[in-house]
Length: 237
Length: 217
Image (cartoon, rainbow over all chains, first blue to last red; front, side, top):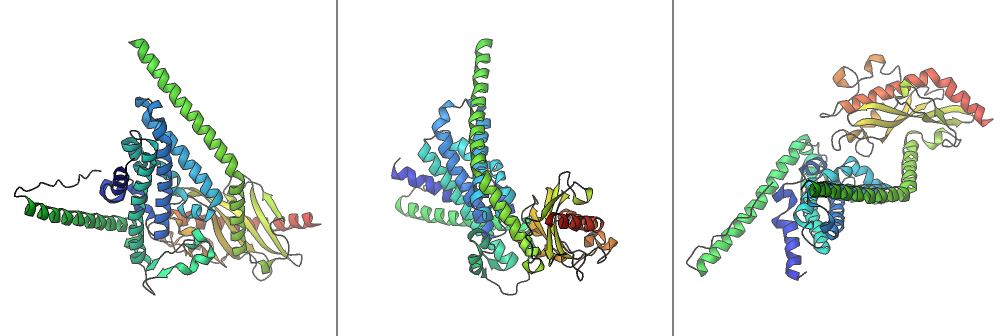
């Protein structure tokens, strides 16, 4: 794998094909669990782990999986990996397990996992596939962190609440009170708050993209008389 | 043609079977490896919760060892035996921690423990309620967990007479218990289950403690 491919995988996962704001896949956990930073980042990291493992597990055996039966086999392998992660979290990081609860088994049904297997791991070698899963997961985690942070500040006036469930009682002092004596804003905590915040994030990313395009166009126009048509990034989902 | 198709189907089926077997083996192994740590962390989690609702100053016996199995009872919401921890202070009944199930949560059963003061002054009053396990919607129905919100403490010091038969409902149903907008089924299930535990306690109080004295002698 060349350095160029390596950076392309990460650029796709973190920005160009970001699962949260570009591909818009796996919205169920995004909307439900992003009511606080700790929940959002925890689930993001658990998903990242599953995506990395499943990429690494499926890519090496991809030629042994018959085409007609590939989806059930993929789901089977993903489900096994998720259950292994669930058992392990329950056993060794029980606090975090209690925080994420029902969302860990639901990683199986998060379509982004299957989507990356189908689109990437079933066509590429193991190392690349694992990295792709990792990068995509990190991209999702980043979006979840911003969403969770925004909703937590607007909804509760705090940041990092519940961190003691992950790091033990000493972490209780890490909670940042952004707005003292805040009375709470229910809309930000309920699912509509997640939709609104996600919409703003997508708008923000598109604005950044358009600005970059316009700059590029301006630079091209100065260099060549012909307008270099720069196709906007394809959006799907 | 038909032959090759049959062959292809057979190959696909065997392939699926092969992956299913490997998956099962991996899961069985993981289950075996994590079973003890999981049981240990669940047990220690329960002990922490028991300590929250039955303060150590309220009993001088080994409350965990002085536990007993209760036969299945509709009031405890379970078809299975449940457990009760019996606390005593100076050989007199002081507190009972009863585990019960609310079978009608939004995401299935909600398992909880209820401590009931049994000494002279607090007789029949709730010491506290904690949820041990549930599958309620995260961010919506999970405020019944003490880690997420203080809601569950509204039961503290309540009893069968306070707020009385009609009051043991959420406010939406005309009762006295608060709930949070967006999730009514969850608190309704919890309020009903706690009420039933109080009824069970009222009916079985003597049994609970008599049994205990028998064991201690």
